[in-house]
Image 1: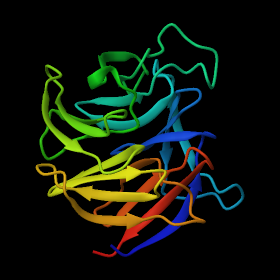
Image 2: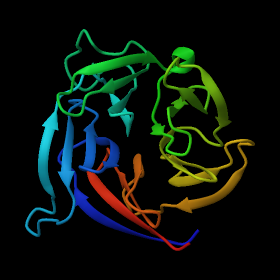
Image 3: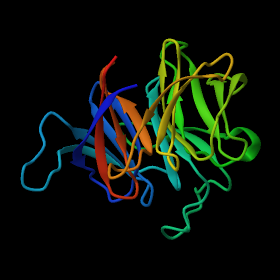
Length: 235
């Protein structure tokens, strides 16, 4: 697929590793502090290349590597303990957890294990099959569709490459970022077959977290450089 890739703005945090658009604005989660900022992206400041901060919440997540929103909660993908980046906390995930967080307060309303007690780099609410989340099982290179109500696995997609990351669910498939390969690949959710791909070549920032602004415009965040980058699709 042909796309146009441009740097959009510098994130509120130095290590942005989860990103999600909601009706209130664009949420960005930090991998180091595990705080989450709601940003007004309607205008970028010319001086510093940043956007306006609306609000910020703490979280009990750790080593945050993915963010989505659904059923009234922000869902954090906690990729194990955070001791590599900061002082460990009693709430850190021992392996990998999913936290459902109140966007008003940062309070944890739900905590569940990643399937296979694995780490994770990606999570996505399925707006086409409400009440479900797509969660990556990092070690097994899989993305599971999980029913929020009882945490049962409904479907599993095999990922083609290592280090899967941000995802976007569309009506006819699931787009999955593979950070190390600089690829965003569209997969059939029934067969795991590749349907399309987007290449993100150097010198563009690496794709980590991923979210849709519109059907034709997406954004991703790069934990390494701190940039939020825009992808305009030529469909």
